[in-house]
Length: 153
Image 1 (cartoon, rainbow, N blue to C red):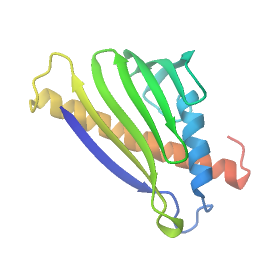
Image 2 (image 1 turned 60 degrees about the horizontal axis):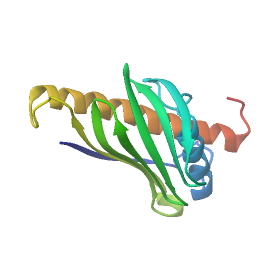
Image 3 (image 1 turned 90 degrees about the vertical axis):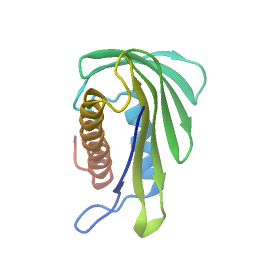
């Protein structure tokens, strides 16, 4: 099993100041349509809405198709549970900290079908996923900053 967790600061010198609400709204936009936020994703379509806070989506990520169940845990966390595809598990985007220490953490616990745990292949997949998700979290925060500062996308 691959387990990774990283945190990026939401605020810093020379950047528009983000509130928890700003970051939450960005995460909700990303959950609904991740294409502007996740460079390695080429398809993202909501396929079934169970409620205002739970829905399924079909994605293509790094050339592989998945079905994910999205659970919005307002106002702090969104959980993506892989229901089908070659890599199963959960991914979480979580807002943590307060005011000057506000951050966005992503974590994932995934199992790659047919790949032995701890193998070189699993480690390579984990490295690729980590890089993709760091870029996605950074892109999410940048998109929210553009919205807050009134800069068009």
